[in-house]
Structures are given as structure tokens and as C-alpha cells.
Length: 231
Image (cartoon, rainbow, N blue to C red; front, side, top):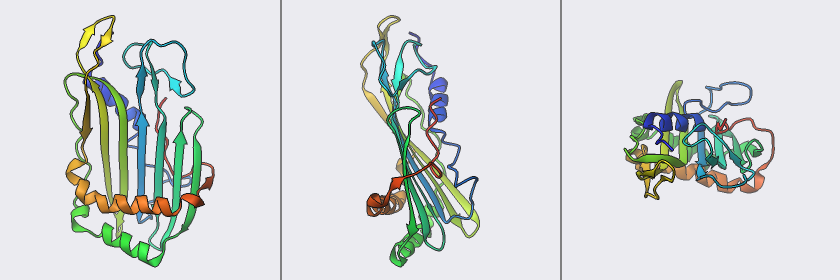
């Protein structure tokens, strides 16, 4: 089994997450929202030459053609308007092609909206831009786990876009052409690490809103979250 190139692995990463394609609002792009956020998480667990396939396994053109990959994924996304109206959606896909989507709509309390606007007006946050994708280690063998955060903030008509990526990568040299890669240690990469402190208040606010509205989520057709592209 030949070692996949770093460029092949990185292009597969972008393909899987669709990082450069921001999520849709209803039937088209909506630039009038005060805030749009999407947090996507996918596991890519390789099963080398094992018999049988689970419900969430499919083959992709990566590494040995006989290897199969599992990629259960989850997405949480939010749209907030300047008047406090919001839409929250969660997408869980344990079986590829059979996503379970739940959503809710409502209006933020005056305190929650004021807190959000205060966070978005932070001068340090306004300076954050999409960081460079992290460099893959020379002995990278496979992508095991990926998490992306996509943010769009409307500053009085000027749109700020931020995308950060966390990766867990299997590393280790090939033992032989037939035995496959060795059981090397996983390497963790995060291009958003320098901005973690700055983004933390917004992430905590987002998590808090999800907790408050967990019981309000109802089964629905997908509208807001962009699915993680897996083929």
C-alpha cells in the first residue's frame, strides 16, 4: 500500500468537510443575518481489509482501495438576525445518506441579544481572519478526525468570515508494502489555536443557546446546515 501524498490528504480533507462552501439559508445565500455559525465534526476511522461493512461505511479513493472508512458526522448551525430572531439546526448522520435533522426557531431575549452584540463588537474578534491550513507532518498516514468552525459576522454591511480547522492525524512510517502503516501516534493540528481565547466567548454563547433550546428541537427538513460532503 503506497503512502498517500500530503496534497492528496489535504484535498480529501477539504472535499469531506466542504470548508469553503458556507451553509445555505433557506433557498439561497442570506447576507442580511447578523451572525451565521456552523460547527462540523466528522470521524474518519479506517478499517483495513476487514470483512463486512457497517451501516456507516463507504469507500473513497484514498490509500488502499480495499480499505474502508467510517465517517459518522454531526453539524450544528445557527442564524441570528439583528432583531433577535434566530434559527438553530442540528444534523446527525450516523448512517451515510440518512441524516437526522432537528431545528427550532425563536427570538433571543433582550439580555442574550445584547450579550451577543457585545461579543461581536469586540475589537480583537473583528481582527480575526481565516488562518492558514496547518501543515501536515511528513509521516502523515491518514485523517482520523476533523472539526471545522465556520463563522460569518455582519458588521454594518461588511461581512467578516472565519474558518478554523482541527485535525487528528494518524502518523507513522510504512512497515512494508503488504502490512500497511505502523501504529504510530496521532498528531493533533489546530489552525485556530492562536485565536482560541478571542473566539471562546462566542463559542460559549453558542453552546449556551444550544443547551437552552435542546428541548425545543423538533424533526425537520434540512434548511440551514450544509452537510459534510462524503461523496
